[in-house]
Length: 419
Ligand code: EPU
Image: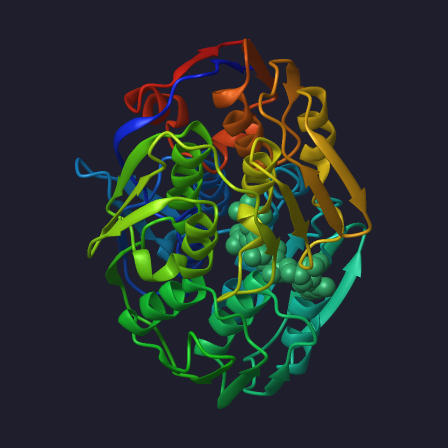
């Protein structure tokens, strides 16, 4: 297993280009199953989760071609199987996103139930209930969801909990249903909006994406299209925290600042000076140590759970006491024990972490447990005294394109050790 070795103490400086958003690229790839013609997607990030999705589609018989401009052309006309096996779903829960499109377009799907996860139990009951309400015949047997439907029917769906992939799955299914579907208490995440825009480009009749009520009028078929994935707001924010934690000055380019308001507000509170353009953000810490901040995660537009671990690392070396409250997932504090191994002073009570900032973390061997937890360990390593070795970094490769190259470009001393 590959490891990262990070020698801390270097304030980051320079510019970094942000890749396409993982959490938009994955549902958009799944949405290609709905189209009658080829869909060409650009700004797809080069990540392990994207490779897994391509493998999943490829095993179904879908044709995928990557062209010289790194666009992916997907043609699902050659599909032969309607099956997502456990061996792929267990490595990437987002595989569940093929359920809605397969059912809507082909009337059948067998998709492994995602198992446990390092950040919480993460059930998919709302995906299943919604599809059942649209007329699908669904049974869960032997760890698999077996679903069938002649043609899905439009329905009024109220989601008890705001769910991102749940909203996406139901939205995709509804595009080809008979009649109108209304999704209430829908997720408002920018990645949901990006998927909706791609579906509209394919001919879907859909309004309200970005609000908590999405209305979809089913059509008989969707066509091929061209679509460019939006920039990754979590990758953008992670590099801004890297600048803040090291007391540096970094400009993130090719991003969308309007999607980052809650995070930028916290960075300003931490003492950062921000300069913001149309598609870039520059963060300057002017060599100062950050102030501790209080953060409470919630669905968009509030502070994202996917930035919680990174802000825990920031607070660990900040001046003062920081408080982090996690309300989206029940067990997303796995990074805390690893940060403690680096000297961080953190107490967890229920869903709240209280962090007493210390002046210097010390390097230690640490282990990544999930994607964002690994990012927080890399951030901690950037300021720790000595050489931090982060193990199990396959988690980080799921969601950060070329992280060591991008950090090295900003002056970090970081190396990948193949294992
Ligand atoms: N939930 C249910 N029932 C369901 C679905 C969700 O109870 O049927 C609960 C979950 O257990 C959780 C809450 O609802 O407590 C929110 O989960 P959600 O369904 O929104 O999460 P997700 O769709 O599985 C996506 C992202 C995650 C991100 C969350 C929250 C993708 C592929 N994944 O997951 O991204 O943390 O939304 O914003 O879009 C990451 O990128 O590191 C990552 C984990």
